[in-house]
Image 1 (tube, rainbow, N blue to C red):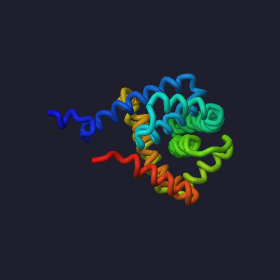
Image 2 (cartoon, rainbow, N blue to C red):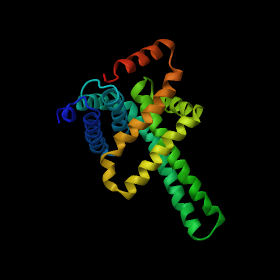
Image 3 (cartoon, helix red, strand yellow):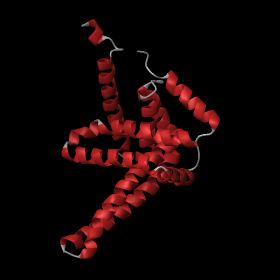
Image 4 (cartoon, rainbow, N blue to C red):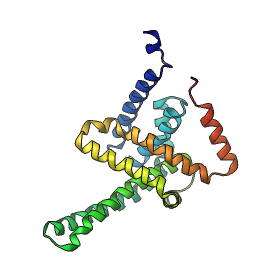
Length: 219
């Protein structure tokens, strides 16, 4: 029984990570409620996933709160851009959906609009990850995150799949909203960090790899 209750046991570590994802997802939801703060909340979510959950650095709440405060202005500016794109696409989707119901050929563009909305959501993952990991202004972050996503389409496809599956799962089982934000950010970070690593200078790349190796749990 002792070996199963040992905190270093793989099962216990797994349960601990599930609990962390639950708590972190709830934090993200609470801090996203004003809507305008979703950008800062999402940046803090990624920061906490990367530093605390993946690397075991610091404390969950402190990491989230610090990242939220520090990224608020920049991440909010980025979120306004993403939100504007989503709102425009949403109203376009309503128009084309109505045309589709009327049997008009042009109404088939409704499905294309949905694809664009999913891509924007995947881009948001890159954008807030970029805000979390690098410095710069809002417009620069928007531009560079988009370029990184486009430059690595296969990695972007994985992130897109994670986002689409998560949205679909939450629509079917709403309770998953209390788990999936952190979990999807975690899965996405694996691919996004690989993209970031390829574009870092040599010094930053070596430091990132070294820190990742040092953070691996001892077996």
